[in-house]
Length: 344
Image (cartoon, rainbow, N blue to C red; front, side, top):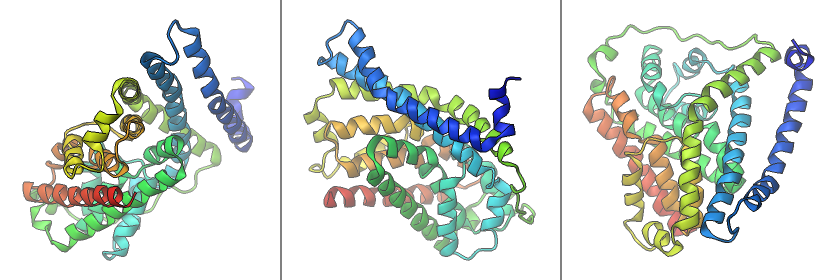
């Protein structure tokens, strides 16, 4: 084994410092490299094709690099937040404060809508209130480290914080409303009849080198799973950036049409994507004149209310509870869209 491969275990702090410098150097080189690559091709840089290629060659490695870096860091952080420890933190909490805690935990935990069924069952067994569980299940896919990192890299910290605040607000309020409706009877019978288990804390006692290993494991798992979505999303974004007229997008997703926000939500719900795939499309839509509130509503509906997630949740929820979940979250997303179109 080479010295480079042994460094994470022998001197993990030095490895992290060197890795951070290498990541930053690569990131700073992306823009000139993309310009050089487009300049070397037999296309006019000012043409629509040249503009689309510039968008793709810059954003594809940029998004993948941001994704790998943040997933690595969050993989280390997530070693403190196992499913067992997450259940232990939420079990026994009262509503209100517990909704806030659950939604906040959704930011730093790696669970997506694909994990909805086992997480839901685990929360019920640990005695977590239904509304608190929904706050977590809304926040975890919608306000995650991938969305935060990509929004920060593509739009800056103001838009990133805006999205985090809105996502947390929707998750907290929607979970609280569902909890107030007392709809536990609409859990599937086999879920309600499960014996309660004691949630235990876990995730401590690991060395820094083991947490680095956890970071690499997250990169292999998450980036290995989502990179096709990233490339497809960026390719679609490049097409929008290069060929879709600004007036067209401003008319469909602008501020003036009252129906633009509900249309954006209606389009977003049946789509199946994640933050990594949808954010490059969001970037292109905004550049073409789409309104921020409408685009945020579209993005939230894609990530938080995907049709495949509803199919998965049907295994543990009866239709009235699924319908209530969709209606409450959709209402929150619509309010967000209209509010920011009115203010910004």
